[in-house]
Length: 195
Image 1: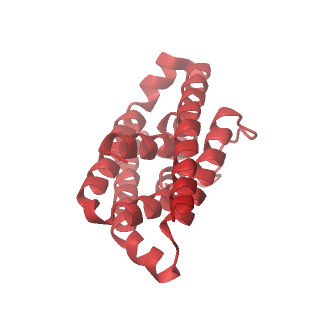
Image 2: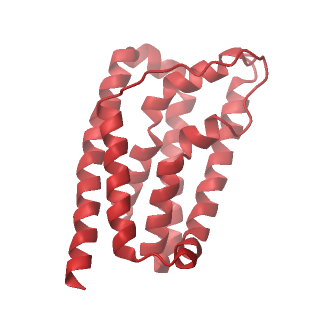
């Protein structure tokens, strides 16, 4: 995969438009003057986890003894399930926190931005692009930066797009992710059949 494909895939999995209502809900009890600071801190924690996952991915895959084809097929299946959930949300929930304490790493950095699906795909990409980890880090950082900008603008975006508009954007992103997941799955099967 090239830089742009990796960037788009990671950005779609981070799902910033789908996370806007959850982020606003979690930060509801935080002092309005501190919200932006907390949001920036949580997003930087997410970036650190992304970079560590990319750098450690190849070693984790080799330690587990997994083949590239199995990782590609599994990654395609995971992305497909994520995309289906984005297109047909089976649960709309509000993160409720009765305490007045601000979030710290959980739930904003992990699992909202860096969830199990993003970690699995980062492992897949880092093992299949082991010779170009710099490109992968740049693609991951770029996807994170766009997510960062969207989430910092979340209050404006909710007013501009409305909740229905955010749902429509998330479903469109899910449809693109379906196509990417099928391609990843087919690539894994083709590599397996060729060997």
